[in-house]
Length: 455
Ligand code: PFF
Ligand code: NA
Image 1 (cartoon, helix red, strand yellow):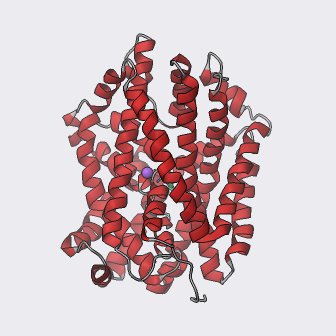
Image 2 (cartoon, rainbow, N blue to C red):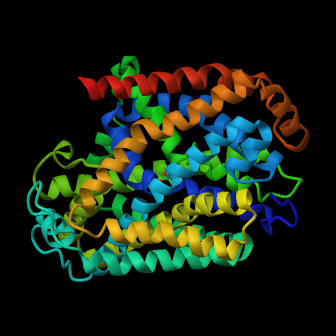
Image 3 (cartoon, rainbow, N blue to C red):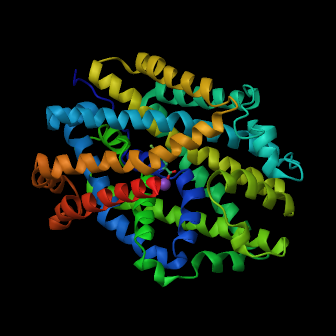
């Protein structure tokens, strides 16, 4: 495990933008709006903010601290904290691998759909178009053939990702995020402006923000809020440990975590406004209610949005803005998780960056390209996504927090370390949230998922 000349971010904003780039992704655009809508609307902002402050930001700071203090990707960084903890690092690497192989596929779809937007090539029925024509599923259990129309953009996604990682932290990841983040803000900003000026936007925003205060008494709403925060901040996969390991010695860990956390949440709110304005437009066009058209995830992006685009004046432009935003937001998240896998092998086995990218990154790409464009790809994607979201995320963070806070009792030492270099002092809040609130919530989340599974 050689420690010599570790790569570093070229600038302070480089790390911040990369951290925001990883956080802002499909979770902001297609997950948050629907979760909020379903879990109390405007009232959801209360548990959501509580989750951000009592788990999201504290865990973000913990990840930054571990990465910065031990200067390595998760397996080696955690091994330096305590030998057996290396296993937690590999668990995070495994999860990152599983997310990477399917996240890339969604970006590939979005690339195709940016093209389909021109002239609305999905025709009159985007739903069946997506399932049967595009992904190739005809009926449950009927597996179509390998889909070249998905494979080609997927290969392109992997070539871009591996090239960027091959160029390294500064010249690849940092440069990409410095282009992607401003670009995303402009594209998505234009989209939101257009969306809020559509007829029916007000109905959509009412549906999203109308507060249902009774939701605050519902445990599942709180679980949804914490789940959204974990997924959205990319916590638990070792991404933030990895990215922070490339920081210089002098770095403002707490200040950066606060900025990154609030930037991610601001983007989620912006996305909620854009998405529900567009859904309001769709409801008004079809003479229905927002509740009939509200959707999230794949159904929102590849079925509802095509319908909206087809009904809009100058829909082509809106469609390109939307799908290119998905691609840009997705790519900056994808490079962060693939770097976890590549960086882990680099640091643990002392392999150079380029061979690690070629072999480990290449193998990840091959698995992704071999599996997902096949007819059962969508089912496989759903399965992995479910498993990761329900258990993988919570378990990774739960074990980490319990080991660091209780088994090793390292929080006070880590806190002193972070406080000497950061702008915002942590005080007792950090130790209490991480030692008590976070593990209880994570444990409850896993129990809740299991209960739902078994009933
Ligand atoms: N944080 C990203 C989002 O909100 O879309 C999603 C994500 C990226 C999750 C990378 C997990 C991950 F490893
Ligand atoms: Na996010």
